[in-house]
View 1 (tube, one colour):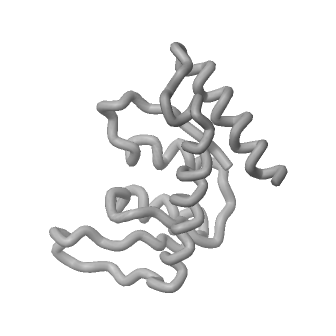
View 2 (cartoon, one colour):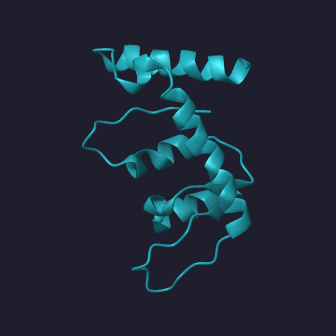
Length: 113
């Protein structure tokens, strides 16, 4: 599991390649916001199936595994559980390093349960 912090004004998909770098996976699950050709190509180049629904404005709609896409719910539930830690939900820390460190502590705590 990896976490990367971005600024509040930055889009999450800009960090997709950094998160995929060096990871071995059978499938890459992401929401519609990550539907970019370079992300799909990177996922397929690493031997993984890209399970990303296509945006509605795509000229050629790609197929994706709708049943496997339902597993993305696990990631959303992880974010929900992380936000149960008050320090994460309120972004209590002043520095990004301290905030990311506590994200790791919270994730380890959830993983150990």
